[in-house]
Image (cartoon, rainbow, N blue to C red; front, side, top):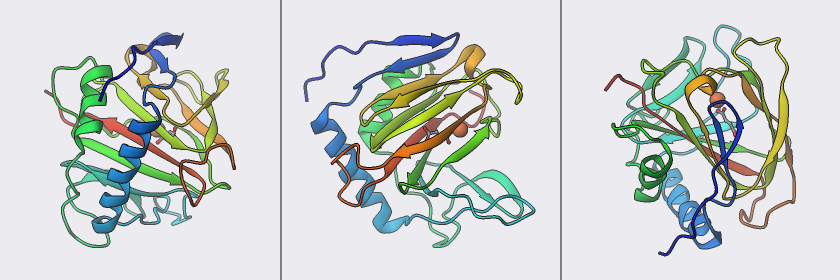
Length: 210
Ligand code: SIN
Ligand code: FE2
């Protein structure tokens, strides 16, 4: 596969936006890998710690570790909460994105796969369940575009929003690693990549130090 040179746009200190990181063929290839992962590690419905309120996204993972949320809290686990099986391996195309964009010596250990139906969203939060914040979070988007919101390291600070489209990548590192972020809404019908509509987002993380 040939890949066009990518443009890394710095939107805020530590926040890199890489439009069209994956071309249409690479998006289709990644989607096929996600569909294969879902065969053995189906999407599950996470709930909020303590209250048990369902999140509006459904999720699964691939790689040695997977992130999940249930009444007991947020954490990484090596097995799927419903099937009890180890998470499927991270596809090469995902590992390549981490090597290309992560600027980190170690491998990614977790790849969270979120599925947003057109009405789903994700409230402002920080990604802080990892032991090593020197490693960035690398994000890949597929399917419908979304309105992504990005703020500072305090919940109440100013925020900016911008659209993420199918094939776009983003890196939250350095001063942006613990920035609050979320997804305000999905722009339903903006992509034809997913026959069922909606959006997949993959977030690649290093969990342990090293
Ligand atoms: C997340 O922060 O877990 C997901 C972000 C996104 O969907 O772009
Ligand atoms: Fe996040």
